[in-house]
Length: 170
Image (cartoon, rainbow, N blue to C red; front, side, top):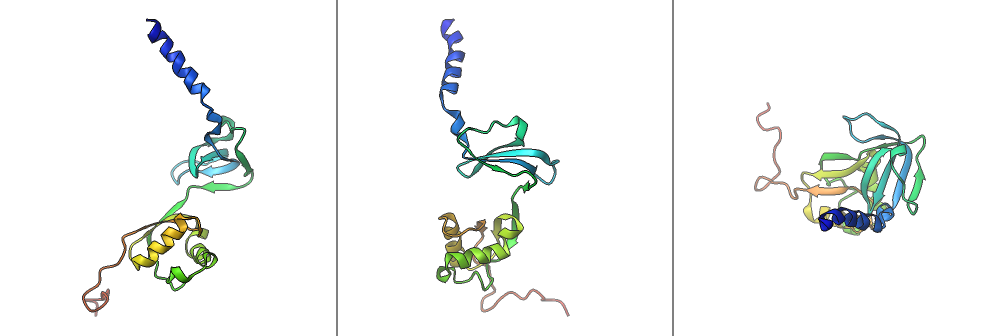
């Protein structure tokens, strides 16, 4: 009986003995937050982030900001969930030959095409796979700022040419 009775207290002791205050590295507070297109906005909201992952989103009054967290006052600002673009082609002249582009050039091209519009993830449905892979690796390595890229790789072409999309139209 004592073991059963002591077990919950031991569990609570372990839980509180762990320094849970270091669960977040960044706190965005005071913003109007749109967590999704189908939910109402959170007025005076807060977002806690740890290791580049969102831990919690909610009203500032209900979220305890850890003492060590970097706090950014977002009063008067709006935060939305990142957008997905599920139909991109990394064929634009500014993105081809990514291995020859500087980090600044590539970041600028990705900003013009994607990130300035809020796209945090893109689904590339046909591109030059080697080039897209270079871009993705440079983003993942932190050298270039850009969205997460998911790709299907090379497109399928008819032998000897490109597909004729107007076939059958007079």
